[in-house]
Length: 223
Image (tube, rainbow, N blue to C red; front, side):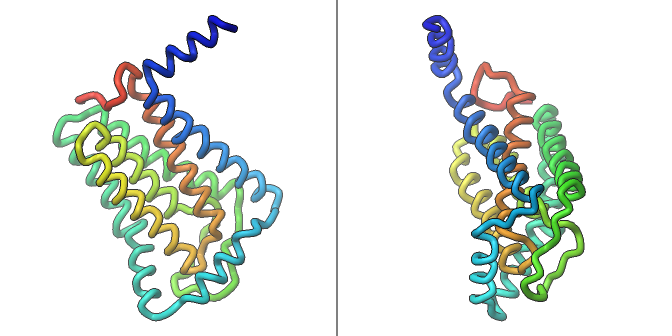
C-alpha cells in the first residue's frame, strides 16, 4: 500500500494538469451524463426542468425572441458548423496534422454520438407552449449544447499553451452557455437536455485529447 501511495503521489507530481483534466473534464462529465441518462431512460422527471422552462417563458418578449433565435442559429448551422470546418482547415493549412486530426475527430465524433444518443433515448421535446422555432427531432441530449461545448473544448485545448488561453476559455464557454440558454428559452429543450449535451461534449473531447496526445508535457505538440 505504501508503494502504491508513492506511485500515485509521483504521478500527481509529474502530471498534475493532466490528472486534473482527467477528473474535471472527463470523469465528472461522464458521471453527470450517466446520472441524467439513467433518469431519462427510466422516464423520470427532473424537478428543475419544468420550473426553469416556465421561468424562461415568463420573461419572453419580442427583443429576447430575436436575440435567442439568433443565438440558437449561431449555435448550430450558422455558427458552430462553419467554425468547426474553419478550425480544421486552418490547422491543415498550417500543417498541424495531429491537431487537425484531433479537431476533425472531435467534431465528427460528437455529431455521430449525438445522433446515436437521440435515437437511443428517443425523448420527446418539451410541449409546454408552441415554440417560435420548433424542432422535430428527439430532445436528449441537446445537439446545440453538445456541438457548442465540443467546439469550445477544442478551442480551449488548442489555445491552452498560448497566452490567449483565458480569453479563449471565457469567450468559448460564454458562447456555449448562451446557446444552452437559447434552447431553453425557445422551449425546444429541457434544461436536463442541455446539461447532458454539455457533459457529453466535454467528456468526448477531453477523452479524445488524453488518448491522442502523450503525457510528457501538458501542452499540445507542435504538429
